[in-house]
Each structure stands twice: as structure tokens, then as C-alpha cells.
Length: 328
Image (cartoon, rainbow, N blue to C red; front, side):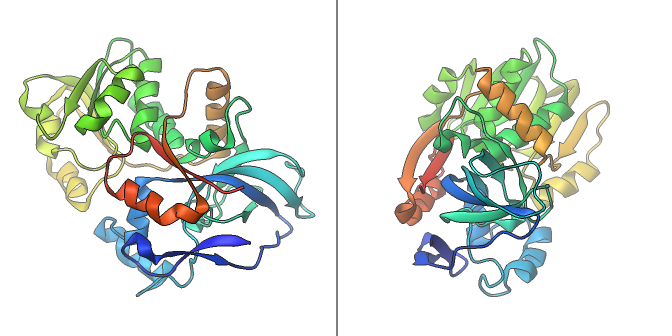
């Protein structure tokens, strides 16, 4: 089968399309013919190993100290069709269309991927995919969709709340905007100027180009500030919260985690990333998408053979929503 092999940490040039052996499912696994995958900012950070310090050394020990050795194929999101099942699999059958997230198991930049029937930390999570969208659209849902869905179960947004989302034009951000709107919030989206029109098109009332304006200095207060990229000014964000407001950073840097322990909170809530990857959440997203409540936002689509170009584009920081890789 064709697969993109991860040969080194750093630039996209370390991703090379090769022929490798097709996997065989274990007794508790299914074999999925992958129709589409996605390239998120998280994927490019893993490629470069540009992640918060407390996690970088353990990941190098897991993936490979000087170059990828244990993990050879990147990619964490997928949508595809089950073509073979292990003898102990009971929840799925050949022909089922599924989507999911493989987490630290990676491996979706390939024509086939085995995944466990039941969620595990390294093998990932999957469910039946939404039936009213394409494989390409479905492949963009598991990462950003679950992060956004889980975040809004923790934040508890109410009708009329003022919500500001930093990185609103990204994978997590575009789904977060839609969940904020679903809860009746008035949304302010912060991102680069090229994404502002797209943000307006998905319901954002107020947009801020972070290259031209610092939202922490405009005197406005918010009930929720959600940072999807780890790029918000922390102290200014806390001061920009209403008295009972919530600051949620789903991609915290080391300095953010330390600052959260030092700051005097009062009645303000300060929350960091928390895993929400479950079959239950994937099925909730499936229902919301099939009901037309949540929709994927896709910027560009690339064939598997152009994975390097796709990563280079995501590295620019200009992508609007999601970038898709078509495989089958």
C-alpha cells in the first residue's frame, strides 16, 4: 500500500511517499481503507516536535530520540470504510463507513490503517461517520470537533454570553464558533486578516485581526475567552474576563500552565486542555452534523502525493478551517 513515511523531525521534506506492507487486523481490530485524512496544526507540530517542553522529551522517547523510529506514519484523523474485521469484533462489519482519531497511534497518511474496535489511548477512537457529508468533510471532524464539543461541556456557555475565541479560524476554532453560537453566545473571533470574512460567514458577530489589534487593550469584557492555539496574552486575557468569567486554553504552553498556578483568580475559572476523545463524543458530532447544526469548514484539499505541499501550507498559518488529504 502507499503511505507517507516520516523520516525526520523538522521540515515537511521529511515526509516521503513509499510502498509499505498492508497491515493485517488483530482479533480485536478492523482494517480500514482510508478515503480521506486531514492535516491540522497539531500534526505539523508533531512533525517538527514543536510542543510544550514537559511533553517533548517523553514523546521523543516514545517516537524516537533523534528521528522517528517507533512511529513511521503521521496523521491522526481519518474517514474510510471497513474492509476486514478481526474474529472478536462485534460492533462493526465489512462495509461500515467510519471516522475517527488515532491520537498517539498516528498512521492515517496511508491507504489502510488497523484500529481497535474499542477506544484506547494509543490506538484511538472511531464510530460510524455522518451520512450527509463526504469522506473528505468527515475526516476534518474528529480532532477539532471533539476538542470544541468537549470544551463547551466544561465552559457552560449561556444565552447571551460574550465569548471570544483566539484562533477562531482554525480546526478547533471553526467548530468552537459553531458550538458557541449553538449555546446562544455573542461571538468575537480573533485571527489573521485573511480569515475574517470566513469567520463572518459562520456566524461570528465581531472579528479582530490580531496583527492590528490587541483584544486585551480595547476595554471590552467577556464571559468566556477560549484560546485554541496557545497564543493569547495570559494576564491581559484574565483581566478581560467578567467577574465570573472563564479562561480556557486548549493548547497551553509551559508558561501558561505556570501562570495559571500563580494568578489570583477570584471568581474566575482558569482551565487547560482536557482529553475528550470518546466514541460517545464522535456519535454526538455525527448527530449534530446529520441534523445540519454543525458543518465542517474546508479550505483546501490535496492528494496523498502532495502531502509535503499540504504541510507547507498549514505551516504558513493561513489555512481557514481544515486542510484535507484525499487518499482513496
